[in-house]
Length: 161
Image 1 (cartoon, rainbow, N blue to C red):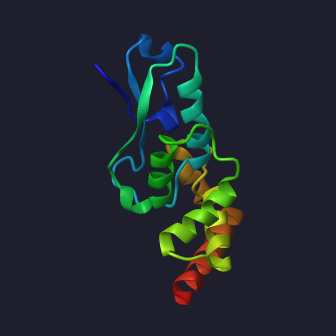
Image 2 (image 1 turned 45 degrees about the vertical axis):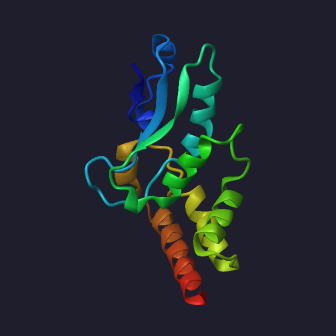
């Protein structure tokens, strides 16, 4: 039997169960929770928890996975978690990773595009809250000012193509 820790990013159980009592398990994330369209993810959590699960005493983690529900609204999170399977250590700088992601995604580097993805990777795609954290952020003016700035910079990137 292989255990799928369905929501490792928001409600992981591998620590509470001591690596599922010895059963092999997959660190998994569920991006969308019921068809909600939101700008949200937990890249910073993935960046640490995957390696925590892999390196804990008597770890039985055998891989990473994601539930393909609502993948269209979080390309960054999908690609980041997929990359975690191949990494041996956490990403040193999520901001730099975001800039490099923009260059890979659009096929070339752009200062404005890099800035936009730098900002979104370290803010809206690195939420520290669970599912309710998304809702609270909707009322945070500074958060949405950052989002709008990032969107404006993303549009500039597209116009440069």
